[in-house]
Amino acid sequence: MKSERFNIRMTPQEKSAILGRAKRAGRTASEFMIDTALNRKIIVIDSLPEMVRELKALGRNLNQLMILCNMGKVQAVQLNEFEETLADIHSELRKLTEVL
Image 1 (tube, rainbow, N blue to C red):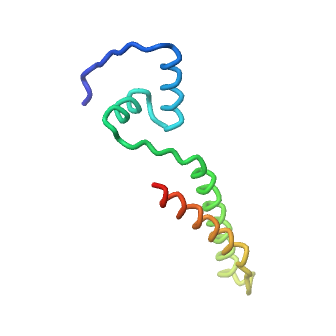
Image 2 (tube, rainbow, N blue to C red; image 1 turned 60 degrees about the vertical axis):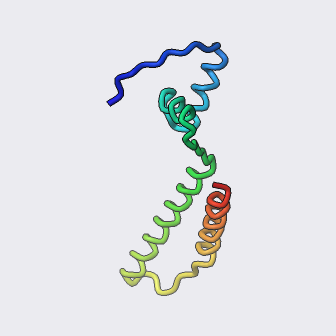
């Protein structure tokens, strides 16, 4: 449980910058300042939400195809585009992990 307070003075510009960086990192100002002061890594990956959306869409499409296959409504499926998109996402994720 956090019970201690720590007050500091700063310019309006510094406060604005800290609040902006905290928001971008998905953290509260307090969390951001504590993490920064304690030299904890704060990693923000701008492209990650888009990759997650793409993966979810691919998963939904694959699930729908499997349902149709199990119902006997689809006999053969070409997954070339699916494989290419998945390979692209995998490549981008690999690049991100290499940087980290």
